[in-house]
Length: 76
Image (cartoon, rainbow, N blue to C red):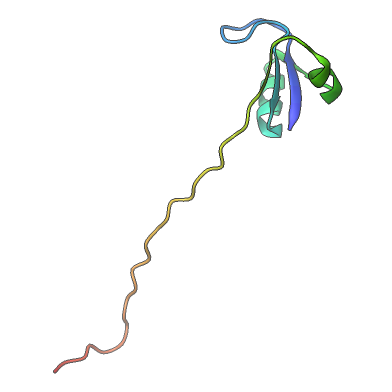
């Protein structure tokens, strides 16, 4: 988890808005030039707008495995 701060206003976030997000998301946002990394102590100490974004774990699709019989079929 990384802390980032908006340095330019966008349609969604105003300048100064702080987020705590996953490393990959933080990397992506900072590369746009609208966000900068900040220290965790700055994030905790601020009284302005801040938000923690937690990603929900992705659920794996359960696949039913069809068992195939390669032996001889039994006949009566």
